[in-house]
Figure 1 (tube, helix red, strand yellow):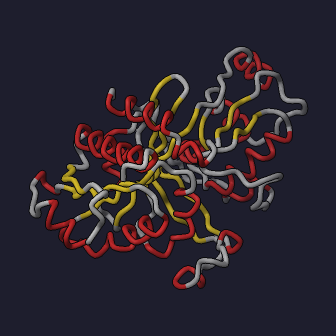
Figure 2: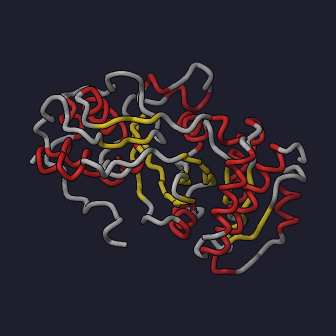
Length: 121
Length: 199
């Protein structure tokens, strides 16, 4: 379990929005909490920002991860993660998949699959 | 550093799974974190969302209209892998009513909601019940068994909340995985019934 838990909550040396240069809004469309972020297979087209948080996000995104989980693991507010992910997206380091379309929640086939999955836990 | 990272990335990238979503709501300290933790495959994460003025829609009158820029709310997040291509997210809502506007984002596209109830503070779940009824979102009422003891029959809770007959009301010890699992099963069954027009 320890491997999966959040990182130890060390005192923050810098205030969160310093990491974003004071920006509170992401480039491009806002990222939903349940959007999926995934590192791209190729090298970023441009160098990553020097902040360690940028590399850390890319590492956490090697397997697809939701914006909410990313924020939880980074122990950073969602707003900050949204901005950082937006930046990494524009650098080609990560891709963002929008949340599953709303219709999925009323799709009988998907719901049946979900039900089977929960029963099998 | 960057090159080492890119080397590790090549060939390791999977497609994004279908992400389904269930919301866990209820009053303050009713056991939402416990419930998420009982079934999540990761330790529940506490995610801080900073609410800003532009997060507030014009259709949210009342208590939230006075919210200040930069209010931070915390929600619980859990994850369950359903199969190779499907994952279920559990979102525990912030307990305070005045964060309705955050619920809208959480609830959009959700399969349904679990409203967790403490019968000693039943009134604290009224707002959640009203909200999901109003949205037409499938939900179940889960009566948390504090200390594992049922103090009220589900029928009494159903009467007190006057929820429709198609809303399951169950006893659920939020610490027990099997109870939580059964509660989620009831919720998805209710969602399926609604889709197939049976409820």
